[in-house]
Length: 317
Image 1: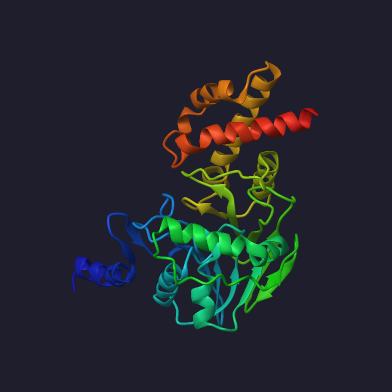
Image 2: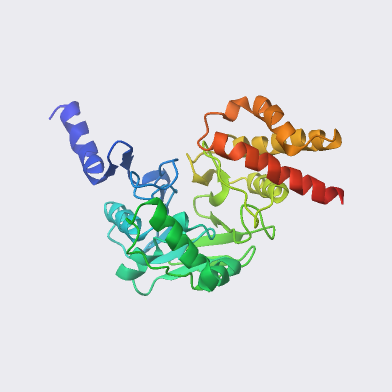
């Protein structure tokens, strides 16, 4: 057998197992370190075309079972995630981590609990309470609307086990530490999950690469800066953002950190010069031209300037 035939045999199963979304790409779990995998999702907003899938589900294969981080946005997406897991291992899913309240990351819980009824789902205590108190239903409606009904059969399956900052959690043969050093950053429900064996940090949407997200009323841009600095100081080998490619600290954490620091600097200077936020926006756009190709830049830059302006103003008082 020649080397090209052997290469085909070795690569064909991976191609056959990949979840193919027409006109968008193939999605499967990629090995990033030892027993840790990530499926890097599309960068666009949830839609009919991408079935609502847009996040980065994570997979840690233990001795007897597997642990999933953020299984996706719906029952349908969660089932696809399970199919891709089963192309790697037949071990059962024994636990799930949800990084925060935004439904594109956790509504896939439904598919996992449907197949593995005994699964334990970990999250920030505020995420658990908020999802039960109505945010779960809000996100079901959001995903259903954005996918034009593709997500309509999804049920909000809530996390069960509340975590705390620096909590040590052992699941099967795998060891984790939970990090949420501030009350709010991307949201007020964030956790980051450090897998000790591989020195991998799952940041959720505290970090994104090549894509900008929202900073809503439960977020804090100043605290987001501090969380990203905190994450870099952990000196892990692998950083997994909520959206975009995984990598080392320089490639995966620094870009968003530098962006937020630049927004803070531009807005603080403009505020001192008595400029309004709409007057600061074009200055920020010029300063941040390296980011214009990030998904969501045009939609979010004005909102980011306004959010930072309000925070700077609040600090002034």
